[in-house]
Length: 242
Image 1 (tube, helix red, strand yellow):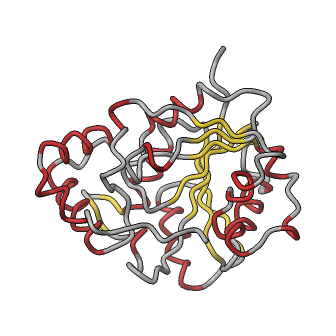
Image 2 (image 1 turned 135 degrees about the vertical axis):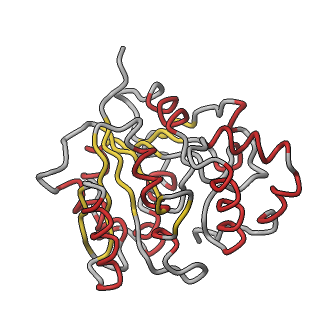
Image 3 (image 1 turned 30 degrees about the vertical axis):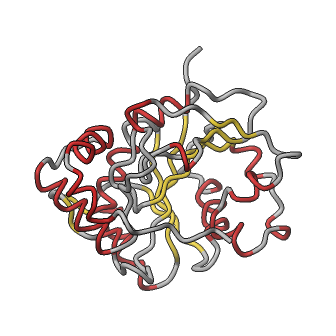
């Protein structure tokens, strides 16, 4: 059976307490956001960016216009609400699934995304990989659109609004989540290929300077061959969701 059609919804904002403006930072001849859009376009039938309505994110909308990508703007402090607005926009295709993508992952893996798409099923609400099984910055999440649209926003707390899919993981009695085994090429959770800190940017800059068309899998292989390069951001950690 063919994989289902999917819309990739990218959450992007210029504000960041650790690395302001990171999603529009230059990287290998493109912006970070430009890389993310290009890679999402490799597995999705449509790519949409959702950003805030604040003036600080006018630049995100302008970048999307230059890249011929739909941009939907919504509440500054409600990422869940921005996703709902994006999916409700009449320009967005009514696909049964959407991919949640973050704009700080310029090496997201279209190969891994297609691997997840092959594991979708009518009785599932979310298809993902476990964070502890994968290189940070490579995966996306696949969410059943009807499930997401049926969630009552009034019942969500702050972290669930910020992290969009958190409520699906936290209510296993209600939502059906499938965790997919990660292929060996991406199975290196000790590595970071996401962009949160200056050290992350330095690592990514060096990788893209050497190869502007680098894939996530090739980046993992490069870091495994070069421990000194991988050590640049080794001490950085993700913020806990709660």
